[in-house]
Image (tube, rainbow, N blue to C red; front, side):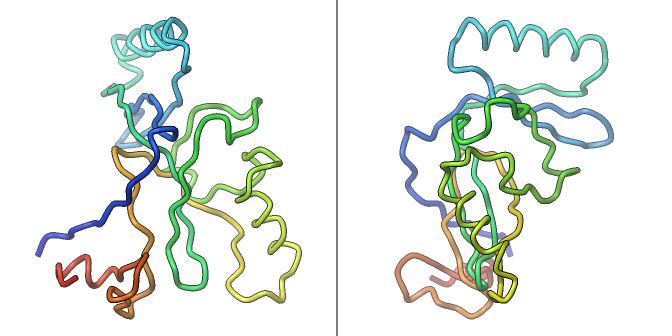
Length: 168
């Protein structure tokens, strides 16, 4: 049975231009490209040079979204992010397959996700605290979903089992 993922409507304000390239043995890297088209074209030319030299095995430039995915009390949440949500000195290159979990230190101090992680991190007695998140890139942002219990009748979420069976 094919897995059917539900996607949420996401504001075009979160749409970004990013490069996706494969480094070695299937390691995929994602890099935010500058919103200035001249700088972005220069960076794409530089990445293309690395591709010709054999440093990368593939290079694709895409328009899409970046989001933080984290589990909060059995509820998988997807928070869209923009380049401005990250610290200015933070590298725009991310390798989610190697760096499985990212912590809030890469986010701006004013970002609500960083504030939330900081709040629960310093209260270890809180159950199900959020300490890190996965960083994902793609053409659409997945809809938030609950744990394995099927809550699909309720607004705002569905269960992974419903995604697999296709019963909504």
